[in-house]
Length: 199
Image (cartoon, rainbow, N blue to C red; front, side, top):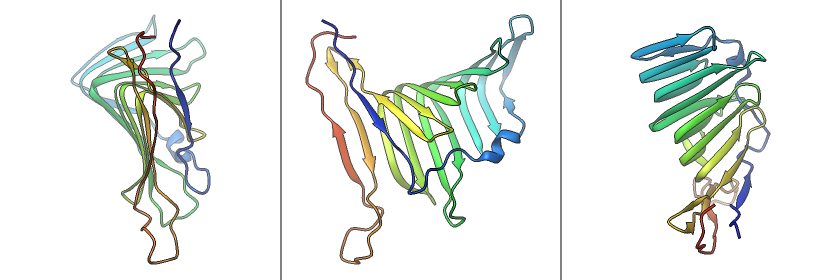
């Protein structure tokens, strides 16, 4: 009997829903690397060595980027490394709040058509406000919906045991000075029973 991976729906969002900074979409994509090879026939490109991707506030870093243009004209990029990283500023109605999403994993898959980033192996997704950690999710796999600021995390399995999906969610700021500050983290996790079979 197959063991199902537990899936936790994580709404990593501020009080007002905010997606990626809209102005980023109109900015050019700049890719830098030590080596590049491309094939116009297959519409593929490979970048290796200190890969950097920039588009407005969006930044991605890794060791290798495999880029492909789909028949519909959308880009799909697979970024790998010891830890491939992603960060992007989010729209926030409060101009005093600088809100950012940060992601890291062994592999990042960006799908332009779906506007998602999939984090695979050692996945970690965080949201910060003015440099302060507000929300965090870790798991084997995390799918982050950039447009709608939603994510789904899967714990996965390792060594015959299920892994946990762990989230850290900051509590709302309270007016009572005697209560915890807004930087205190409320920790929660989904605990899974041991399993003898992998997926």
